[in-house]
Image (cartoon, rainbow, N blue to C red; front, side, top):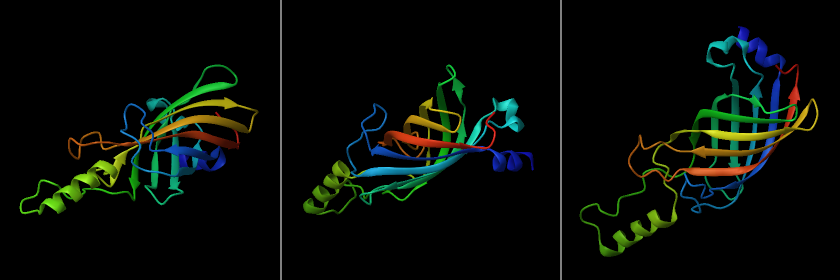
Amino acid sequence: MGIACGSAQAGEAFVGAYVHDVDDGISYGKFENGTQIVVGARTTALDELAFFGKPRVHLLVGVNTAGETSYAATGLAWRFDLNERFYVQPGIGIAIHDGRINLPSPNAPGLSPQERLSRLEDRRIRLDLGSRVLFEPELSVGWKANRRLSLELSWIHLSHARLAGSYNPGVGDVGLRLLYRYGQDR
């Protein structure tokens, strides 16, 4: 009951726009198009999870404007204040998405040459995330404009970490989000 009460009394709501499917050194990038519109909420730092460093619980939804991969994620984030105005916030979560998984193999027996070429082309130009459920690490750098409003530069990554096979292109989104803090932050 303590977590639910603390979450209901304070937290943050946010909305942002992200460049979708970037080549960020971890994700291959450039398979998909569109802008990712991300909305979500985060609790305040949870005293109830002090043994785990007082993380914040987040829930977010990313919707792609071009009909490409959209997702929903939940997880934990830890805020580290650099000074009164700036902070860094790493997080980790689990996401589900509506993108492609398990494109047909171009090496299946009995394929015609045309079908094999078609499947090779699909794998070259389409993002195959390999699993419906993915890890969702993220990193934000925030600036507190005032007590209630913040702006974050944020990176969100989705990947199966090679648990669903050796092919793991991942997908990375980088963008800005505006946060509104409600209740008493701790």
